[in-house]
Each structure stands twice: as C-alpha cells, then as structure tokens.
Image 1: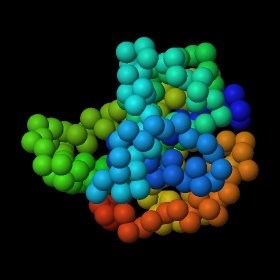
Image 2 (image 1 turned 180 degrees about the horizontal axis):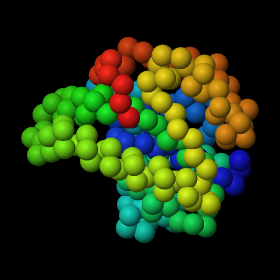
Image 3 (image 1 turned 135 degrees about the vertical axis):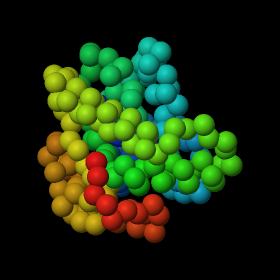
Length: 195
C-alpha cells in the first residue's frame, strides 16, 4: 500500500469527511492541512488538502506526498488525477435527497445567497455525474475503487467497512473506525431510497 494513494471521493456532503476520520482511526495516515476549520456543518472537521482543489488546473505536484496516505478529492476532480500514480478510491455514496438537504442547510447556516439550481435539477445533474464517473473509474487501469454507502455505515457499520482492509491491503482497526461514528450528526435523514 505504501506506493498507492488512497482517495476518498464522492459528491459533496456524501460522507467523505466521516470516512477520512474513520481511516485515520483505523491506522491510515492522512494528507490534510486543516485550513478549513470545523464548523456547525462539519463539527469534526473537513479533512481537506487545499491544493486538491486546483487539480483541474494541473496542480498535481503534491501527489507524491500522498503516497501511502488518504486524501480527499471531490468526485468531479477524479478525472484530473495523473496516470503515473496508482490509486485506491473509496467512493462514498449517499441518498441524493439527503445530499441536497445537507447542502441547503449548509447554505442557510452560512447565510449565503444561493443561486444554485432547484433540487430537481441538481438531482438530475448529480445522477448524470454518477452515471458517468463510476463507469469511468471502472475503466481506469491505474485506479481500483470501492463504493461505500454513507447510509449503510450508519445503519450497519460492521458490514459496511468489512471489505476495506482487503481492498486497501492494510490491517485496519475496524473497531476503532466504527467507534468514531457519531450518529447524532446524521441530521438530514430520508426514508426514501435513492442513489
């Protein structure tokens, strides 16, 4: 695993920060910079690394620092990962209506004027993105990926994380990973199953 880069990805508000926290508890070192501090929307932190946000501009000189570590990369930037590295991608999935509700709540908490499209339009855009990015990941020889459901982690965590040690080829402490889960932070719930 030491030469591979672990990427935690997914749509915004899909549980990527939670997975980063879990991996750290399980024994995986992280590549983060703590520039984005915890707030009411992510009280345990965002676990971001600022240079990731300019991957689409060709800023990838930092990638060697990520070897053997986990770094968070939003799914829209995955296609900009250079081919000269090997990646293990943990792709977080969450019900789309919960993602939209969480984003709306974040915008309100920040008292921002949002010009975001309607939930119906955003849902179609997110669904279209997932229909494109997952087959793309499947076709990449330099990328192995696994889908992990945010909703499953909260409902049946042992089963949800059971495949990760073998996938990462690392003896994760899954008990410590599960112990980090804070169900009180599951605030945008849905009983409707979706992507």
